[in-house]
Length: 303
Image 1 (cartoon, rainbow, N blue to C red):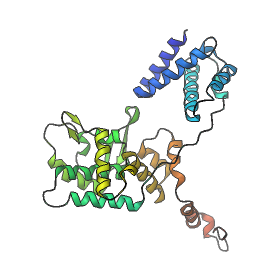
Image 2: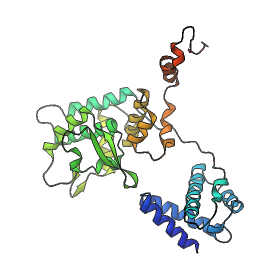
Image 3: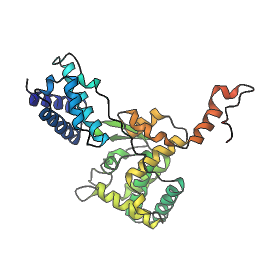
């Protein structure tokens, strides 16, 4: 069977069974078609030695790019193994290029307080501008629920139905998840809903559709400027990072955080464990069973 047919079947599986996005499928197609061009013979019949030579061709690429290409190969050969087209997965014998995920940019607690103070002041009073009330709700959901920008702007109007404590969010791969809705956010919902125009299916409408991610980005930076914060330091994703990091600082469980953020792999969530190491030492001293034993002191020695 030709590589083109095998790659096509693999992509169909990724779309149907795993809900891979259009961009993800396009990236897999590019990586696999490129590999098929470079491997002598059929990619579907390649062995570990051929794949090592292929990965050697990727040495000039960034480690993250090479790692992505290897991931595509591993999943492709795993599919062939499951389909009975091969008896092994030769890509499993290839070492993954060492990568170092950059630490996310985050905001301090003081920065977040200033943002909310500014948004709250602008939305205060008996008849505040609708745009100010909308901005307050957007901010509550970015920092209070950790939504991605694309998830936030595309929320349907029915997401605010009733007195639910959770929102049903459609995230990457068209997968749905529950995210917490704070009491503050519910209060902001109550203020925003009466200002919504009738007939729109979106919670944040704009014309015939919803506000765009670009517009959300612009509004957030404008708010930051009015709050006296460097606009260049603010973005929807920075607020999502702040949501995750500040929750971990407060003692949140990593697995629960993974579910709230909608990460398919907990390794993605683990980037947030860069929180203050001193807090972790204090946590062990307070919570570890040995801390309760007489004569045992888990405090680190003084320098």
